[in-house]
Length: 329
Image 1 (cartoon, rainbow, N blue to C red):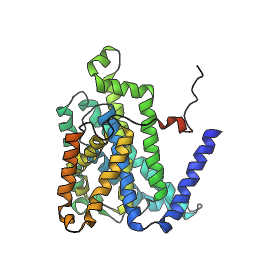
Image 2: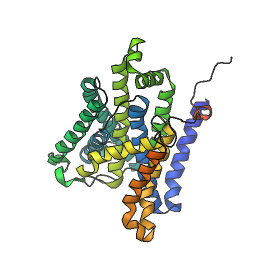
Image 3: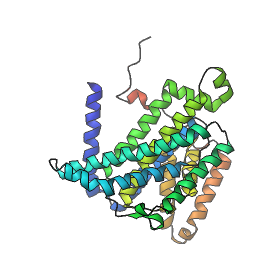
C-alpha cells in the first residue's frame, strides 16, 4: 500500500511539474533542464556498462541514434493511424499512448542492437571492445545517411513534439532508480566482480559474458529511450548529432563524475551540459569557451583522476519507498 501511494504521489508531482513549471520558468532554462536530463539518462546508462561492469564501450551514440530514429519513425508513420484508431479517448491520452509506444519501441530496438553486438563482441576486452563498439556506432550512422525514408543526410524532420516535462522527469527518475536498484542487487555484485577481476569472477562461477551482455543491453535500452526524448523534443534528428564525438562526450561525463558512481554521473552530466552555456555570457571569454572547457577537464583529470566522486554513491535506498523491508537482526 505504501508503494502504491508513493507511486501515485510521484505521478501527480510530475504531472503538476509539467503543468505549472513552463509558466513559471523561462523557456531557455527549461531547454537547458531538458538537455541536462537527457544527458543524465545517457551518462547513468553508460556508467552501468563502463563504470559498474568495467567494459569500455564507445557506441552509446549509436544506440541513442537507433532509439531516436526508430521511435520517430513509429510516431511519424504509424502515430496518426493509432491516434485515429483511439478516437474514443481524449486526444492528449491518445498522443501520450503513442509516445509510450514509441519510447518502448526505441528502447527495445536499441537493446536488440546491443544484444546483436554484445553476444559476439563482449568476449573481447579493453581496447578491442572499444574499437568494435566505436565501429558499430559509425556503421549505424552511415546506414542512417543512406535511408531516405528517415531523411538520409538531410535529417528526419517534422517529428511530433511529444516530449514534455512529465516524460523528461519520469524517465530520468526511472533510469536512476533502475540502475541504482540493479547495482545494489546480487546482479550488481556480479557486475562489480567482472569489473574488479574477470578471471577471478569466472573461477567463482560467475558467467562473465552473460553479465556483460546484460549490462550492455540494459544500457542500450535507456540510451534508446534518451534518443526518443531527444528527437521528439527538438522535432529533428540528424546523423551529425550521433557521431563518435557524442559517445566521447558521454564518456567524459562518467569519467569526470567517477566511474561507478551514479551520483557522480548525474552531477557531471548536469555540469558539463551547463558549463559551455555559462561560458557564453562571460564577455570576451565566450570566444574561448571551448578552450576553457577543455582545460578545466584536463586540470580535473590531473588533480583528481578518479573523478569528482570516485565510485561513491550515497545510499538513497533508505528513503526509497519501493525498497524491500530489511530483516531485523
